Amino acid sequence: MGEVIKRRILNISLPVTLYKDLEEMAREKAKTKAEFAREAIVRYIESEKRWQYIRKWGQASARQLQLKDDKDIEEIIHTMRKEGI
Image (cartoon, rainbow, N blue to C red; front, side, top):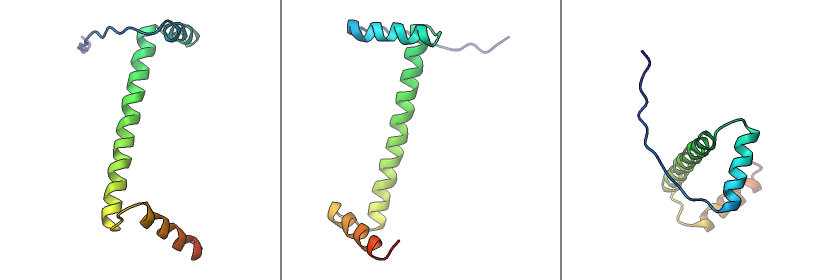
């Protein structure tokens, strides 16, 4: 017997124009509105997680390089360009 997937129901209200766009796009992709919305939410969450990782990496890099502000970054860029790196 297959694994049972637990689900929660999410009811949302959308502006009419967005709802119509959702209907049209779901029809074009041969998906239900729920499938389309679920996929969009998953993609958004994955994107946010990637950006959080990038921000954390940037903050760690800034600490490691002892960068205090944008001016420090500009100085590094200027130096690297000058040296042809």
